[in-house]
Amino acid sequence: MAIATPPDMRPANPHFSSGPCAKRPGFSLAALEDAALGRSHRAKQPKAKLTEVITRSQAILGMPADWRLGIVPGSDTGAVEMALWSLLGARPVDILAFESFSETWANDIVKQLKLPDARVLTAPYGSLPELAAIDPAHDLVFAWNGTTSGVRVPNADFIAAERQGLAICDATSAVFAMALDWSKLDVVTWSWQKVLGGEGAHGMLALSPRAVERLLSYKPAWPMPKVFRLTSGGNLSEGIFKGETINTPSMLCVEDALDGLRWAESVGSLPGLIARSEANLAAVAVWAEASPWAGFLAEDPATRSCTSICLKITAPWFTALDPAGRADAAKKLATLLEKQGVAYDIASYRDAPPGLRIWGGATVETADIIALLPWLDWAEAQVAAEYTQQAAE
Image (spheres, helix red, strand yellow):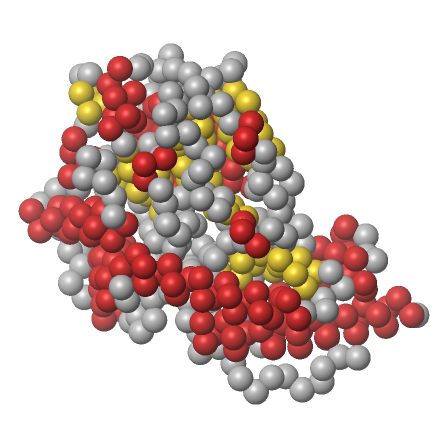
């Protein structure tokens, strides 16, 4: 029977999209009044702001002092592609593919770069590939957190400390919310519009000394587009790591990124950000444990994401539907929540199993997660009643 009365409590902020993500609590456009608009990004003040994005990010994340961090074109996708095109080919490569974006990286490596010694280690949505199969003599490409599957690696123990290959990590939905083990990584990428809720523009590319050494000692066999070039005349393009971007950045987005970083510092930097995100996951976990109709897509609690929290629908009325019917029903559930103004953009990713995806990153208040959960029950009851009646007719 449908729950006729909607819950009394409503999220103060209904933005639970997994990217772009919710702005930090208390955000207003007034925070961007100091943006260097109408200025050249190469001028002293605007360039200082770009450099500040780099230095604040390094400090919050506890990045090792000998790493390089740069701002690059094309958001996280651009940063990942830059790393793949610039660094791969010197060794065989293993790719972990367990959700949509990691499958994209596998496709690029196998079908675009056409690397002959590429191994794709796959797993269905909700699981991780066999991590023990990774060869430490190979380069490794993986996502720390599967944005579209809600599955994360629990730690970096599967990466050999004495590895010969480079570990290239897409961390866009993990950085600023999970503890990355920098000693086990060589390339880390992310975007502004995920955990800190920035506006879309550039990506961030972090390189270890081993990655820099590869750049300087290895030249790929393929032509390198300008926006991917990290070296010039056999030397590292140092300007990229000092605020000299390859193409023109939006200084409005730069100011927004700085606002997010300052807010991150105000809530305790990385430990505070992690605690906020883990509290959101814990609230959903309590609800899911008691739910008769939903559960985590990631069944192993150790691999459940605290940012892209993906839920599957387990109710008999739902599982009895054919695949198209399940997709339609899940979409109706998400649409109903949006119409009520309590949750925007929480349908599962288009390539993922039909269900819900709730962003639980640090900019989301746990109180809003708690307020949302009864609405999930209400919406499911409405949609279940509709499909149950259809089945009876």
